[in-house]
View 1 (cartoon, rainbow, N blue to C red):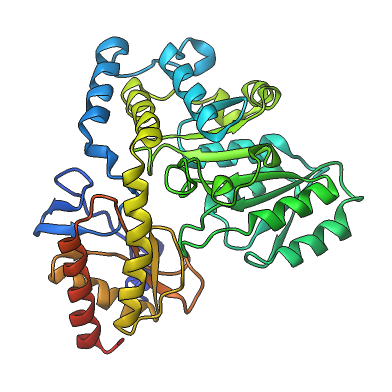
View 2: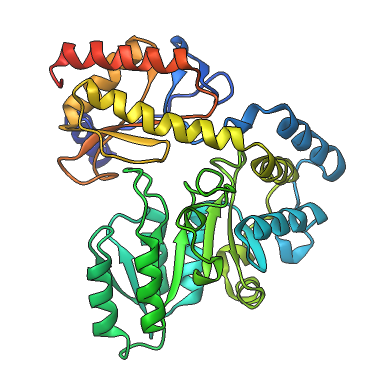
Length: 390
């Protein structure tokens, strides 16, 4: 396969080659790798719940009661009572009538979007939305227009120009953007959608469990009424310490998705271990606010400290901290130097981010200690000086 070899060689030459590097322990602050113990600063395990004893016990109990797998789709007796309990818990967290589980967040987005709109409809999407949203838009066969990142005035203009031309309009945005860690301006987006009768979908994969006074996400962070967003999409794989996706919404929308959404209908139901773990994680989010508070403190403080070192770091309140380097080669060199010093903070390059904006994507966990943070900062200083990026 000569053409594949050529493509891979080109990726290596451009510092765009990717490879899988396994861990030999759980995704927690201190991890075991093939090169020894390292500090992990790239996990989405924001609240540190993947190794929480109560979550692990709930996972094990679910397997004992329901077995290791479901053996079928939800519509072909792959359903169990535990899934319904999790959906109810997620609905309560998001203050919605109901919720529906999906195999992954990716499957949730492509399924929801392609079911809610079709070729007679319009989707208006933020230019930095997640790849799963982009693919869902493509699958829907709807007309898609893109608004400039977080530019609600541009969104308003597009709604005004198009609202009479299509059967339905769906506006889609991330709540927290995964590569920049910034928040969508939801209050302004909500007003525009209401003004022009558009449906609003918020992908809150990185906000659920992290933002808002109750951990319910970006909508609560802005003190918006949950009813102002029709589709609250989220994942179980980040703060909720498991795997899978979901949407919290109205009863009638859930009923419609059950009957029409291909990525739900034709997928095997989530395994009991995953559902049991996520259900316990939702319960803990409600009663262990210290995790969320610790994460917020770290998100603000670590940003400030990295900026003092001389790096380009935007403001923010989320545990996603982009350290903008620009050059893909320099970014990957910095990541390698950090790894030598015991820090895992991978570089992110095109096509994941735009050309010229390669970065380290540092993510924090509530369980990172002060000494862990000190080690990160020291390694960033030494590595940055060595390769000349600070």
